[in-house]
Length: 103
Image (tube, rainbow, N blue to C red; front, side, top):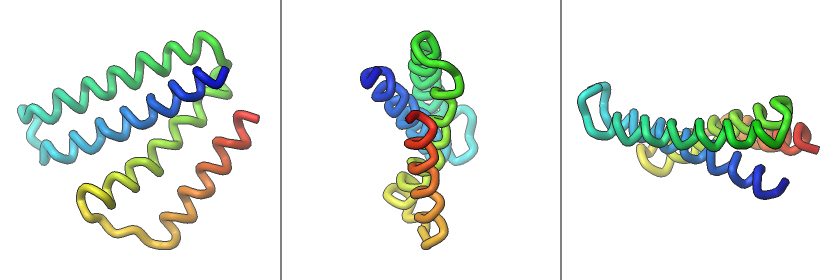
């Protein structure tokens, strides 16, 4: 089962990276970054579907919330967007929620 949870984390990472590429496209749907973002989302979806083969939806779905925290972190690192205490507290609560939901 650990392998499936790792794949779900990778799925969240690829979805988050896809969001970053969409932002890099600057709203231009013909920008190559849009294609890369869509590929990231596609990979994320395939991993998600694979996980559903082995785990119930109620265990898989909470991993989607990890993307919120990952996008926040990537936005800070790549786009120099500001983080505040409430953002960080929200991410901590998300991590706790995902942990509790898979137990």
